Image (cartoon, rainbow, N blue to C red; front, top):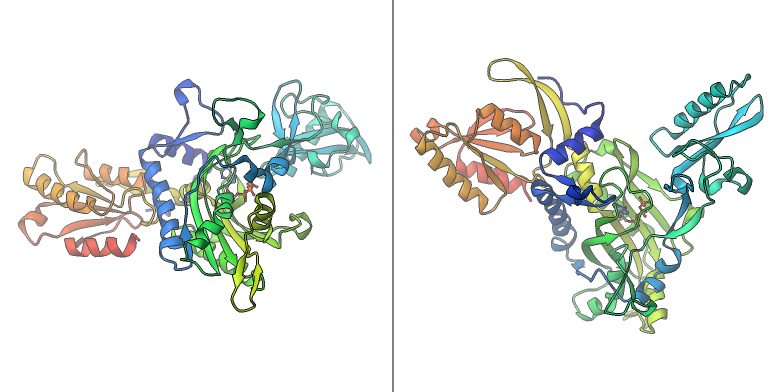
Length: 507
Ligand code: ATP
């Protein structure tokens, strides 16, 4: 058996597996799809639910200091004015007038082509794993095509937000390769608008929420008044968010409808925010590891102080090594008391808490770990996907595709396989065990085809264990063969041992 390894084009393999085995499909595909929207199929919905449930159990149920809420997707439009989203939730957008393509200005890079110290033109490239390399290659092609002699200088990659007004007309559009069609960047609000009620005028405008966080801020007082919570405490929720992303891309990594899992952790204004910030970064990293993401793929990125919003004390992103580059997975922001103060001012309803010790009122500060469920889903698939060569029963070498998913999140925990489908006593025994497992754990019953083929089908969808019911089970001691996905090792165990294993590993 060779060591499992990721294929050359991991992303392609993951997208193909996701579609083939019913994890993720493009939305409305029979009508040609709709860019930035996805559907989760029978296995995908289980995987997603398991990730969400693990987060909810660990973040809310197993803690005494975090409570949950589920707030509405459409909220009073004033929420988004107070939060700053109406004015400022924008991305810089560049249009190509010739091709009608739109680009995020901070994802469209350019460089002057400098030969013998003189700028002879410009090249552009969309952000990628190797943007500088792409620009350098484009500069070399440019020089060759124009038959320019001399020494080509290394490119200087800048994005379109840094382009000088006189440069914009000279930068080629990535769509046409010709300069002259790109517009200067302009602010584009990413909130989806809708109308509430029968009127379609400005007074009826509402927004699909671009984040779940504001629900927790707006309900802060209502939660405090339930009397269950004392500082420091958190309010958490999971749910859909919507952003009209200019360039949805990288499969479900950046989509227009996605699910967030956010928690607002409120602390005393005099509490040590840096300590709590660090605490939550570590918690989030440990949690990602607990659902099977390897430490080697995780890193931290501290946002530069000068790029932070004025109220922000610090933001650290947990980054994940995706096949298309190291990208933000989870943002942990120390937001001061900005959000509650904004809502207190805009609504006229104080959002403070009375401190018994100092007999003073104050507005709590907040640490916010915010993560996208779809991004975790993709990370789990990418980290788990491997291909390897193994020998089948006859000794022939074949390729095995395996999804090494943690038992915590695997869509199916156990597959129950009768050794032969034409032996009623084996089938009856297998179905009885299957029914028993299903009461607590997601299981799958499969009697079709050679046992090796049935194992492969489970390997590909990440099922950690297969149990086979054979003649020894019914004629001897009732033990079953447990086959482990990653090592492919088999051993005989009792039913009680099987349930003990599941209880320990699936939590
Ligand atoms: P990015 O810089 O990638 O656009 P962001 O910094 O705007 O993300 P936040 O507003 O901090 O993201 O949102 C919190 C989390 O929600 C992100 O860390 C990410 O996991 C997830 N998320 C944000 N936008 C999207 C999207 N378009 N598709 C999927 N997940 C998203």
